Image (cartoon, rainbow, N blue to C red):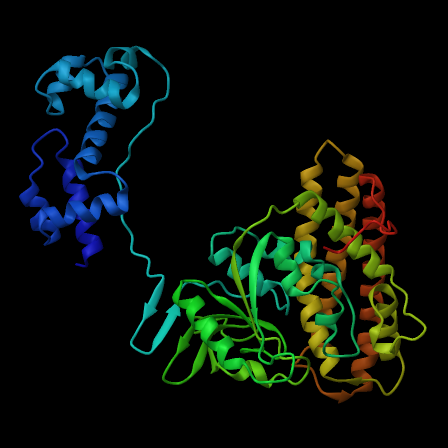
Length: 463
């Protein structure tokens, strides 16, 4: 029997003897702990002394007896070990604010002090050369910029759903391709700006300074210190490729960071990579680490939610600039272009197609849930906005269904290179998905109109 079980057995002994004698020696015998040590432990974890806990449990049971039976106050007082009805009266009124007689006649629901049960949660493991934070959440969506933020924020006390984070950031409504970096650069809100939008203070530790000097050792030490303080860190390219990952541990001997990425370390085992891997990112700058320190500002929830819809419509209706590269197309324009590419012969399924498909098909599911949540918030106060958001969500859901059909043709598991049979099957699927996406964006625009906002508003700012 472990110590937690012994503590709970001792508390069961106390409850079984509320009307009799509670012996400290018996508690010590059950817990294999001197009573003085057990008492110090109890007040530390329960917030009250052991004697106060016993008093509250007795009076709670006495209250139940008084209100559910014809037993008198004096008899109840003696039953729970009080030497006189006067002593019982004083203790009862001190706890409940009314006398035992008043409680017996009253239908008022008074506070119960129920039995305590202890469980053991291990939050970290620290050895001579390593430190690992436990119970760190997994990535719920395969997304490179914001899902890691949610994991860290929730670990330090916030309470954001994965769907809300994908929605409020705008990631849930983007679609782009032609380059593997599009899920990162097609979003107009960088990770650090998003954290600040939510009201949190950060510290950034790059891998290289402005002169190009390697300062990754400073970054590594800052991350280790942050983890020693019980907080996970965001590190770009720690486990994944050119994405923000969650580092929640380190191994001094192996010189490894330990943690989770969007597709790495999301089972029962964490991912492990050399802790200087962050500086080896060659697809984009080696951004290093971001440490979230604490909340310092209020989050304007209503404005941010409206802005997320504005961003979604702007992205969806964006037109490719004359001097832009072809792969920079976004939204509806890109979607139909993507379908047309597979409708023509010679289209190759490469890295960009698989990676972009993997991200966008994942986050769109979050968008459906996010919009339905927003719609329900309007309720009867703005039924027009509510209904249009539900229509948008329904069309995004249809898009999700088409994207699921595309899995055998576009995912990492699909064949590489040119496959005309694949293209023949895939083109109409992408075209149907594009059509549902287009309708969803139209309904979001109508919802904005019902809210009294517009995606063309020049006052709109992404953060």
